[in-house]
Image 1 (cartoon, rainbow, N blue to C red):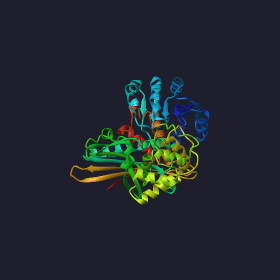
Image 2: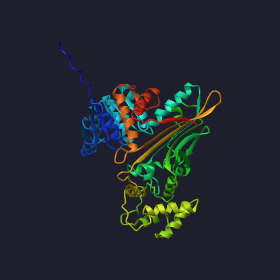
Image 3: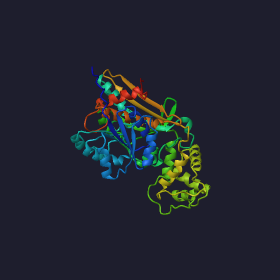
Image 4: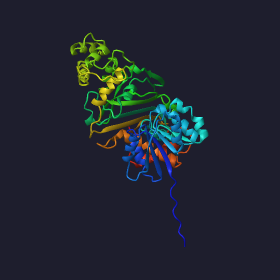
Amino acid sequence: MATSTPTAPKTKKILLLGSGFVAGPCADYLARDPANVLTVACRTHASASAFCAALPAGASATALALDVSDTAALEAAVAAHDLVISLIPYTYHAAVVEAAIKSKTHVVTTSYISPAMRALDDRARAAGIVVLNEAGLDPGIDHLWAVKVIDEVHAKGGKVKQFLLHCGALPAPECSDNPLGYRFSWSPRGGLLALLNPAHYISGGAVKHVPGPELMTSATPLAIGAFAFEMFPNRDSVPFREFYRIPEAETVLRGTLRYVGFTAFMAALVKLGWLAMDVKEWLANGLEWREVMQRACGASASDEATLIVQIKQLCAFPSEYESTRIIDGLRWMGLFSAEKVAVRNGTLLDTLCGRLEVLMKYEPGQRDLVIMQQKYVVEWQDGREETIVTTLEAYGKPNGPSAMALTVGLPCGIATQLVLDGVINTPGILAPYSKEICDPIRAKLESEGLGMTQEIL
């Protein structure tokens, strides 16, 4: 009697654009399925090859050198795959989706949906492709639990009167031993620029606006367990009243967490001109850091005593303690030193970034911390009020994956597999704002040990 040969699983071809620090856990997850064939595309073949070499044994992965600004090359690469994961800067996502529409290739990103992306919704639908965005940490994991909790409250007849989200990617407490209590696992430029963004949120039923230059001074204290944080609003929280379908909410605020003392230090750097992005004609190699500080803050001389007098006048520190703390921090950064500057791009911001990349990088063996907490103030039909709290606390592994890489990369990998498997199959420009998308991702994430705890206060 003849025996039938088992049919080999259909190969699923995945193009991974970018090999940055969050790409590893994403690719590792996808490598578990032998049907997945991965192409890793970077600007240089060497970077892509090094990434492929670090994947688990048996992973099917090929390196590709690709310039995503080369439209023809991008379109050819996308067309050769069933799905493309775009982990490159969000400004390139629309071009990736344009290429994907032509070849009817699915797309997954971890970025917010930009206006340029949203404008492609009709064309993505017509092409029948899934373009799933916001499949990371924040945005990403935050949506998975928000949709769950809010749906459960509404199903029981309750109203979510307040929604608060606080999230921080930080060094673990034992590694926060510098004047800012912070370390950069990537280029500081993006992190510093985010501190200048205006913010919008809903409080007491009214929309509140925080101008970019005032963002750091708007921070408020916030305790989570034994942690003492400060929180400042993150971008635009206003649309989330609609996205999460909570029109009854009188407060909707998504905030960023830092250890206490960070925002006052950054506010001082803003007042002293160090986050300026305009090219300074006078800023040149050969200048000393103290001379650059003099020009930046308008002091009459570059000696430390004169600089400190001007800094105190500009910053108007609220106490001698704060004055001493921040001035000591500026000294630690070398801004009063006679060392020569290495000018970058002719701007104070980029030149400072070069300094911080050295001073505030993660050292071997250090670990990071991701902490996220959501609070839902709920009003029940009988008039009772409760606060539901969900919390995620994750630490990176010393000399292993960081918590940030895991909490962004793993949800991205899970979402990608679910799209490939046809579980998430609604065409168009999507984000995890519905039960149909959130439930399967959350279930897989919980099975990986990366869920949120929930309690009622």
